[in-house]
Image: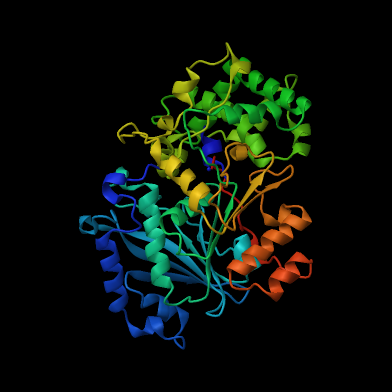
Length: 488
């Protein structure tokens, strides 16, 4: 399950430590003290933005990179407690970036849930509101990881408090409305942040965010694969997957040779044989995650040559994707999946007799985390989040893709959800967003984004009637919400 879990493109509340409150007294006191002792430069609107950022306690500007669009782009670090409930245990440096548009513009807080990209880009909400963007690296992704790493501090509550502290600090500079956003694991993370700190931002736009409420009950994923696309496409994918296992003697030998040439090892997964089987299991998932229905014509099928099968397999799963070297950058994700987030499973009866390993033992997050890191799953974390969304969530937009397997278990609104919406892009994959919705839905969602950003009124009305002009896509939007080729 990795390249899917890494392609993307991929929590138990620590109740004894945090209870159900929004912040520990120690954290609240520390935040207030830091704000009171800050240099006046942080609060001086006539000062240069770089100087204002540098004056925030705990914030260090490490680099300014040029842009060609009039924005200013900074890479920074922020000092965070390893454990927000017990800040005396030490700190680590968390990476972030700031894309500065202007003090008079809204600000979008973005997490992709993984490693920080260090080239300037704008998310869809930042472009819609023509605003500033603050992007954060998720804790415990390198280099935003304390050493030695206490992995019990890698959870959603700790990460939500990272976001809260940073937003609180930067609101001294950016005083217009704030929104939050993220796609896939980033969309999940933006939801978790709102659960614990619902008033940090005025609204959240969460893209393709799965919601695995009950990790033991995954029948929704099996139903998805039984119905997605067309019968012809599903049959071609099954035939291709089976053929990759039938010709295992030849294709796996090629797989091992290519990994050896790349210097790959398989200590974490256990062997090249296990890694190959995992990649084959992933291949159909990743096809639907990143492809469209028209790509079914490219599925090789049972009569394909070895070369065609292997090329398709590499395009879907990545030949080196399950190696120690590739997995190292995603340990924090797999740890979270195996302790808080949950992970999908689905019916593999079509491969009966062709698998070397027990599917339920192999296809789990444990396979991707070094064995010296203990893992224990807490089933209450996602249940708490799900209850909050249904009972208390306000001002959240969820966007899903009809043909994206991650949408098989989506967030669902309830009687207590207010001013919140769920949209689905017809035929959409894991790259679905507001711009790909049908015109009326896209206009309605855009109007809500503008309203929450404090740009309602005329601008929101014009978006509903088609008169709102979205700031044009430019060099900064090359990345946008494009996902890394990771499972989430």
